[in-house]
Length: 39
Image 1 (cartoon, rainbow, N blue to C red):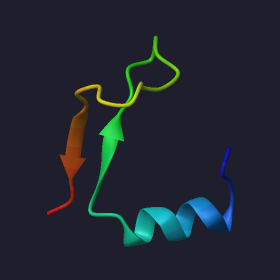
Image 2: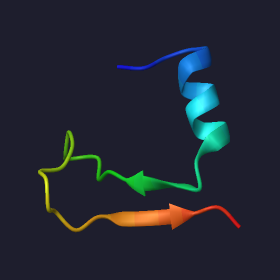
Image 3: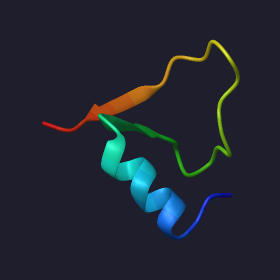
């Protein structure tokens, strides 16, 4: 798990983020995901 400054710099460079439902721990390769983009 990434934490601290590493996660902050990743978020600062990102164009958006993937929504992971609370009941999941992640996704398998090829899964469809919901993406929220920054405007």
